Length: 585
Image 1 (tube, rainbow, N blue to C red):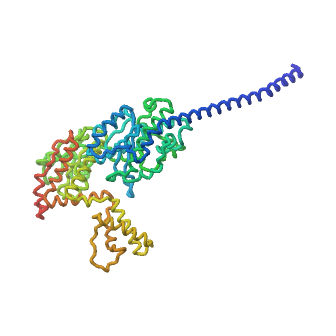
Image 2: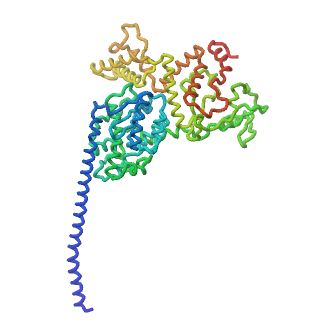
Image 3: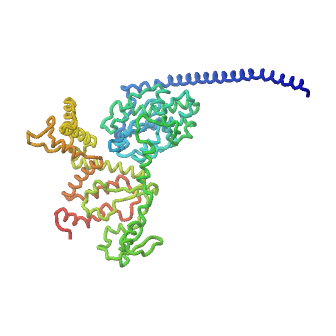
């Protein structure tokens, strides 16, 4: 091609490009405008849909948000549960879902988390059951079956933590739970707020604002009577869960059942960018923290190895675990006879006694399974006579005795602990120790006030007179009702004092305050044991604990030879000698 032809071709191409660029730019702008218009239309549609659904359902919250309206039923006895549960269960099963939440005492200054105190269940019509589980004799089978039913969805935010708490404290399996944050993730960003807590979601999607009640979460849920604010707050938490699930399913355009099936019993997690979304109103114990408690108590190794120890003449003395057998052999006290199929050792010395009577219990092989239900998973040791009682028993009732240590699975162990706590309260009432059963919170408060007054008296602190009067008045009220701070008053009128409280008494308050609930429980147990020992009823107390375990748990797999009167005939004369101060032959 000639040069003139090439130049003409380039000119044509240049003109084509000049024409195409504006057209392409215009096309791009038209597409962008179309997308923007579509997005705005979708936003308008979403806002209209959200507004319409809020208006349709807001009336259901009107009565709930009114503190004077009876929106919740409090269950605080077996009779009230039997009266109100059937109606609620029928409604919840008909709907196929409910809202669920739990409340318990927050960590105190000792880092101790309280037992589950309140279980809230609610439907989206504004009706809620507030079950004070500690007031029930046992967890009702109907409630236990309902919680374990996967066909009934239980909605909440961070509900995996409630599931763990129910398992740890009540031994109840919670199935069918769905974290509402899974559903919130399915919504368009303009329909859901950035914060994914229950209260922000309720405020944004339902126009229900109860942020002002946040402080109620930190109150004492074990009070004799719940306050109006506690009732309102706890009811709203459960009702909001059910309402939000329905709202989200409507906005997403799927039924509750179809929407939630994939999220059943699935914990909600977020990446590093979403950490703020997981923050709840208060930094309470998380599901991860609660989970740490489960493996800590469950045994990783079998309790019973069923090794055998023989006397020098080959008479069977007892069965024991491998660690104890190794202890004898390592010190030259026994030699290994056999290792297959089980470890058998023979003593190198004549033992002080031979098995007789009830001691035959220690000769039988024992199975590593729950003595109540037969499960072999998550086994824990259960002390039939609680440690705070047994530690105050005479040595002859404790030494080399494992009769009252049995294996329970996690679920049975939690149920048994509830029965144990109930029997402790029964004993405290029987021995007239109700007034001594003070709370550690009051004890620590008295100690704190007394330390403040002592600091003022020593010159380490300068407390204004008005505040000093307030501290003294509060301390006097606690002293009047708290036996642990009831130090002996001095008859010396000239004794140093602050606002009529003697310095010596303040020092006694600081010194005598129980530091932990375990110390408080041990003090009461010591009094009960001492009274039984003085009256010759200590073996009866031990028998009552064993009887209580049998009647409350009804174990089906007790080891052979286990008895409520274990060795009592042998121990009774020795115990009488001990009480009378006679030497033991």
